[in-house]
Length: 86
Image: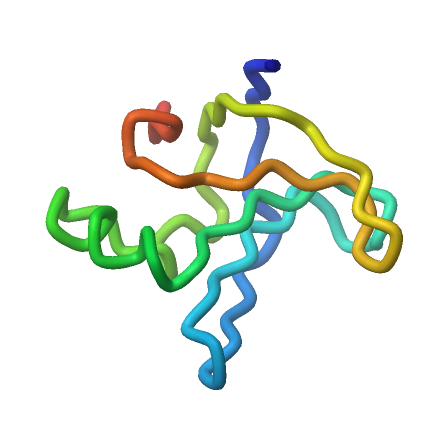
């Protein structure tokens, strides 16, 4: 498990799967925090709209995994794993 602080460079969204991708940098080498559809509703209930995170300084907690296709990622399953710092 790790705690990562940084600025969200961009927020991607897959309408097909309702998955959000919080990218910490412009390239695939940068960490991405992923919010799957199963957790999006939990974030929204806590007044955390993933699209609003772009450009924000945040802290995420979770296990860092090296996905063979997408690179380093942390899966956010709960708003408790996420905090906006500014």
